[in-house]
Image (cartoon, rainbow, N blue to C red; front, side):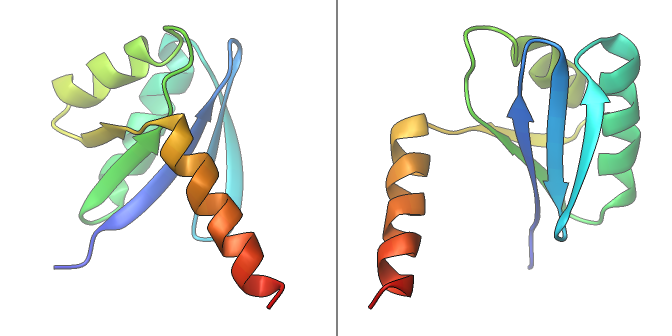
Length: 92
């Protein structure tokens, strides 16, 4: 089973969403979150991945759960180390 991951960088005002090499911006308000949910539901076997950002992620997580969309809140430490490992592999 292949999972389709949707990356979401959460800011106070904007959600930067990355999927299949495209970046789409949504407002971090109810309307923007609803648009993101609609986008996520169109993707088969989607999982939204985000980092905790001091509470700005909570609305999105609640809405994803309410619409039965899978969401994972990942530890920023692991994300940063993963990115570092990818860069170091490129330089070898």
